Length: 490
Image 1 (cartoon, rainbow, N blue to C red):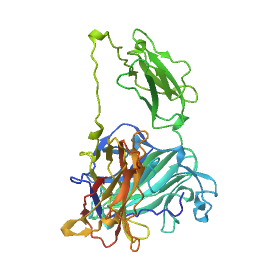
Image 2 (image 1 turned 90 degrees about the horizontal axis):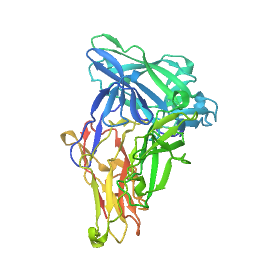
Image 3 (image 1 turned 180 degrees about the vertical axis):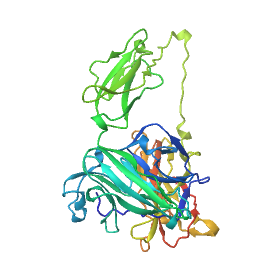
Image 4 (image 1 turned 135 degrees about the vertical axis):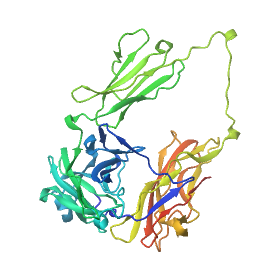
């Protein structure tokens, strides 16, 4: 854990949007009844709703698109094994255990490889509840260890919100229109039940309560040590020529620690699947022949007891017929004119709007901050000479809000990254650009490199992205603001 990380605050009054082009789009909410395991991505685990005179707790699942609002009884929250960390040698964190001992921690700032749970009252309207707040309580914890939820101050010190080992219930008052995160620390592997409750009083004096609501957490692998996993096979081309090499790969979703496979084939006329001898890894390579045309292949993943944990859907091999006699054949030649190559930067016209979450006060109380993601940017270079390229972005004009209110584009910064690139393309991400700070500068008001390829590289298609960070003065007027990010490639 980074003891100097900065927590996000509990209240947000303004929202900001970065628009590549088009209008700002709100996420689509849905409801679902299927049982799910959430192990990566953003979720408002404790999502407070008020509908038809009743207060309720739900789960806002942002791990996919569209957003799904779920019943807590249908959700298992998984703290993956890679959440393990050592308690720092810092007396301020002694509540987690002895220095050097192990805990499993979901951090208050997002790690894309872990679950990022929070609590949310943004669905609640102002003027409905006394004090415009609800009381959120951790009523009980059942499990093999202790559970602590805490944020951190501007100096990295812990601010404990809920702690199971010093007596429950623990309660905090949460204003309406709040979206907040914290560190979730578990002291042992195993299954936990966290019982939350929300209480509020209407402005007419009527008391409301959700009553206790159970939330299921699994720290480590799922019960029984057999993670829920699906398997697919990638790498099969539409067609092969005789003697081509076929390489198939078994892909787990989500990725687990299981690594024992068997491959099976079934060719036309065969009644049953046959195991492929000697193939026990995630990759299987062989030579395409006409005799193998229309054969099907599946991969199976096995657990530690050699029970099948997942089976892929079949994929089919198609091998082209060899050329016929010259008198009954044609030769077709295709070419690419190297003088016709070009450099193109583009975005998906149906995925070009970025809506940042409502800005939050930082723990120091001196900035509004929000974090989001740039939509994917595609750069395609088909130039034969491979002169290299550089893709940049800039917001040339201020963000504009209600009644002509504005703030500088420099208050938005980014951390570029490469989402995809062709083999050997050599694309590298641009440097981090921090939001503007007095005496330091920064921000996307000036042109900043998103990604680049050096001379002698870059040919092919790459997809670029960036983490966005907005940091505003507290005197910024409330409202929704938009600006246009201009992207160029040279």
